[in-house]
Length: 214
Ligand code: UDP
Ligand code: MG
Image (cartoon, rainbow, N blue to C red; front, top):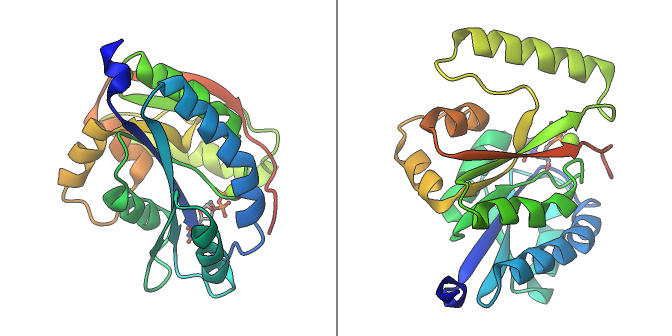
């Protein structure tokens, strides 16, 4: 295939708030998955890992700087204070150069082994590939209850509903990112906006895990 000669970059976007102990285990587990995804893209397949430090007050930034010195795929965006996860994701999306962007939590609740599957669906033409939470057993009963109440209220008001099982862990094509960047919203609810813009979407089931550190 001639398209395999075009260089294609995957950007992982990782918002972090006070996660000094989570960063090293995260990278250890995620890098082999990104290597596998790059192999599936073929020649020119590559990746970057964009951490967004969302106003951490522990040694998160020092840990990120050390990782960046060892690995040129690691990029670090530093916010001036804590803005919250959605704002951190938006900052990461503005910075990322990828042809596809994948937001992911650093606590390994989103299993990174799914990344090659997300990329497979993208290579087959999907513009958004959602990781569907098939199973929330690892979340607490309170978290499950509040999540269910939230999605039910949101979906009653929303022009385009979002499935309760979709999190921020998903693959988003560059075309969608560029549309999202045109939206005037400042306080972003990323899950809602990604669904609202409307693009061919695929779904991949995942099981959400327990928080690894912190
Ligand atoms: N996070 C962030 N800013 C915040 C809160 C959280 O960047 O104000 C990051 C956090 O470090 C993690 C991700 O967002 O990588 C998800 O956070 P958490 O695990 O606390 O959320 P939950 O699993 O409850 O959705
Ligand atoms: Mg978590």
